Length: 256
Image (tube, rainbow, N blue to C red; front, top):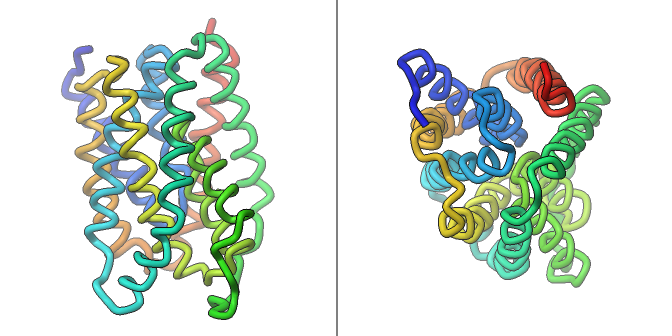
């Protein structure tokens, strides 16, 4: 697939925006998947190509984490979730490569609609402190992360919000601690999924690399700077609503 100068610029900017969004919460793939679909790529190819940027973005986010005793503790604490996350990711990615394009279009579109409603409803943030007395090594938490890994391996989009929900509402981490663990688990999740899509031969490398260039920059800027801006989440929410609406129209009305 060939890209002209303007396409390169658009993909890099889209990847940059997605990197920022994913460092704050999640849903950045709503932007990158929309861009890939807008170029005429099959939904299966777009789903695979999107993983290139996600891999480099999650790597950058993890490397950008502030080194502290708390971070090291959370890395160790999160290791219990590695196995269910990886298993789910492998199964989800394997299933995704064999799904017919028409079905994949409706699956992606349906998840876009769900994400749109979560943005329009604007659920309240979870403002709790980490419960140190809570036993997090439970079958429920293991199954939740397996399910999220399964979904993430399949489609990726929105896993940040799902992970935060599981880590805060079930495992009882504070939002700040949960976000650090989310970045670690997102990195763990993408590796097996990326390998599956790489072996499938479905990745379009040129748009994938263009998105990855922007995603790396966005992840760094988002982690270091944007996270501390006032009303950053509000601006991102408005942007995502517009992007997701466009994607829904594109997926459910392919004749346009």
